[in-house]
Length: 376
Ligand code: ATP
Ligand code: MG
Image (cartoon, rainbow, N blue to C red; front, side, top):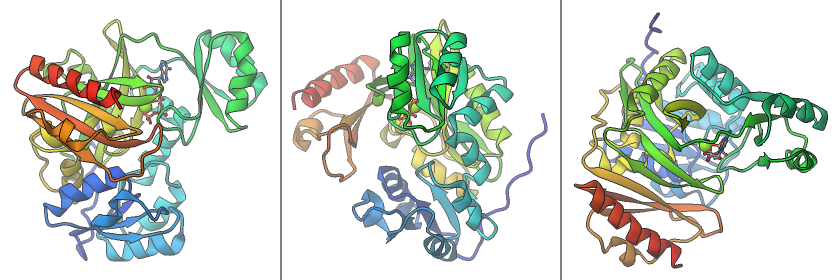
């Protein structure tokens, strides 16, 4: 297969100054990794309370504010994103003078669930049967082809299962369509999966590729709850092969995650995230190099760090509330990551990484911590 040519290196004006569009917890964790490497950060985020704001300069403006983007472009050698729902036009507007990774093309593909599925298919990667829906009539036609149960999602702007409706019988159709608020949607067959897995992959400006061990993900109500890492996961080779095709095909730079359903030992791609990903948070304490550090190395054209596991890992998300810190930290091999966000039901506030020498210890510690989390 034809290998795309390496992308131009970052502008050398201010190479150690990174711009990040978005200043949420992902931006915070990118900056924590980058400060250790001698990097400085400027964030663009509309929220005054954005978690990463405390770690660099915070330009408080909308993501498509032309003046703010210009400011970011002037002071930062390389720009990246922690949030994929940025208008592609905003990214394109600063792409001619600045290195911005991932670029407008990868972003455009990943922002729309239809173009994303078409891209997977073009790379020979299986997806759930799907159809585009833009009215109640087209939903009725689509469900004939896809069958029950199915899941209706907005094509754009969904996260943590928001903007989704499950359709089990014909009676569910009008309410499901109403939930889309007239936005273009996609109907997907509901996959009776055995488990969900994801792979975190990274590609540098030099074309160097690396893959982390596959994680097994549990979602509750569409929100990721827990990721378990199995160092020799049966899905590793297949997931990695898909990621290799996706990253090289897009001439992608940075970390990218692909979520899959596994059914009867086969992988069906659900979606990709063109950024560091929640199911890769375990790498902060359980891998030789975290996904955050490797993302920065990748966009700066530096050698990638080892993605090897340093033990058995489980990541638990802290949603809605954070238990007392001392009750979490009492166990050995347990690490707390608190994003410093205001508690709110259904909001990701932090996570716990558990690392242990044996899978049994790791699971036992997770069981204790899940009790602590559920006792709140
Ligand atoms: P996030 O960005 O947080 O991963 P999202 O809002 O983009 O979430 P999806 O990943 O599409 O949403 O869906 C969230 C979860 O809902 C999936 O991880 C899975 O558990 C379930 N789900 C989504 N689509 C399907 C499907 N076609 N079949 C079965 N389950 C599904
Ligand atoms: Mg998802």
